[in-house]
Image 1 (cartoon, rainbow, N blue to C red):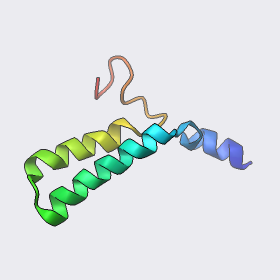
Image 2 (cartoon, rainbow, N blue to C red):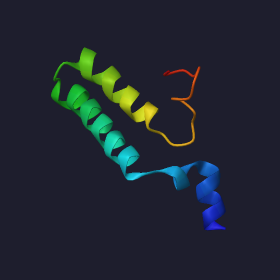
Image 3 (spheres, helix red, strand yellow):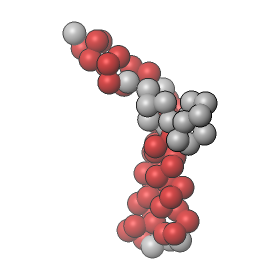
Length: 67
């Protein structure tokens, strides 16, 4: 039951690389919003890093939004 839920939501395809890059993206978003370090640069980069590393969304597939 839990395994089916993980596969249906895409969490079963989450790898360590995804987690690392989502963490980096969240760090960039934090630095842009809370600390004010180049927000016009870091905010879109962080958002793209988080969005591009979500598993099973197809964001990086051929002909998709981020490709």
